[in-house]
Length: 94
Image 1 (tube, rainbow, N blue to C red):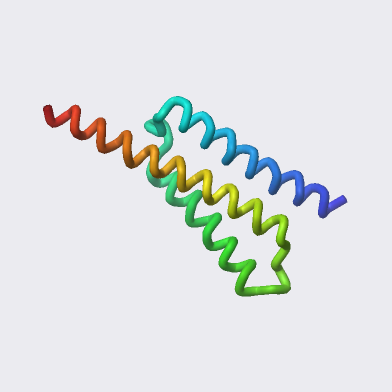
Image 2 (cartoon, helix red, strand yellow):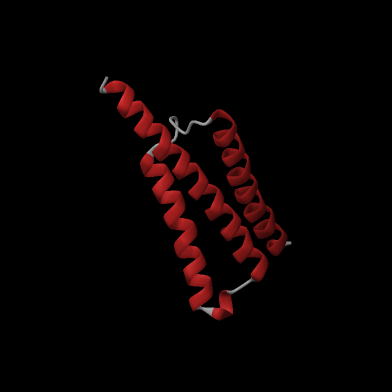
């Protein structure tokens, strides 16, 4: 039962990442997401993955891949935000 709750939570985090990445890609905008949020989200996923790799007793391959997919989605969102922030800055300087 407890493990099922963990799996549900982990899966929901991945669904959130994927759906936000799809939305960000479709709208080509991440303006409503703050840099603090994105960098904290990215860092949390990254350090969780590193922890699992370094402490093999905590390594669960499916959770690792969940983190990996989520990290890739957050990276995509950050790239869109970088691009759209640059475009907004350029338009503001005209």
